[in-house]
Image (cartoon, rainbow, N blue to C red):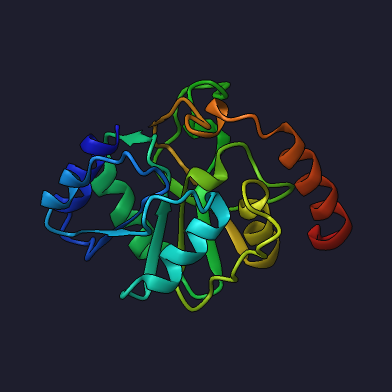
Length: 196
């Protein structure tokens, strides 16, 4: 999926750069043949949230798209144009759970962005748009989980609807035994970072 999306990102006239956080020392570095691609990190696994922090701080442009490497979006150009038209300072836009076939309860709606209400939805963190200056660095104690919740709670969250996002969800982290880490971060998030 990464190769397919890199081709789409590289062809897009609205994407200026693609920063890949290399958390795997066996990554195929030939992906830099896509002209906009720059690889950050030496292959040491920084985990999810520190990788997001590194990507945003390294970005040269004022609007940033944080995207997982295991997603596929067919209608990327339409989505990017909508995000450009909608995104404002202080906002964060991520997909509604209806964007994922595994959670969809009815046919796809028309492409739109709407104000989010209630708790963060499933899949919000796989494809988020935010202004670089609005981004709030995720605390280093939260390495794998709750980064999207942290941002959702602190910025003005909006939901992207009407796009099919194909993903196995947690393709990389499922291969690791992170149960203890999840338990530790869940307790920490509730105690220290969760908005009530």
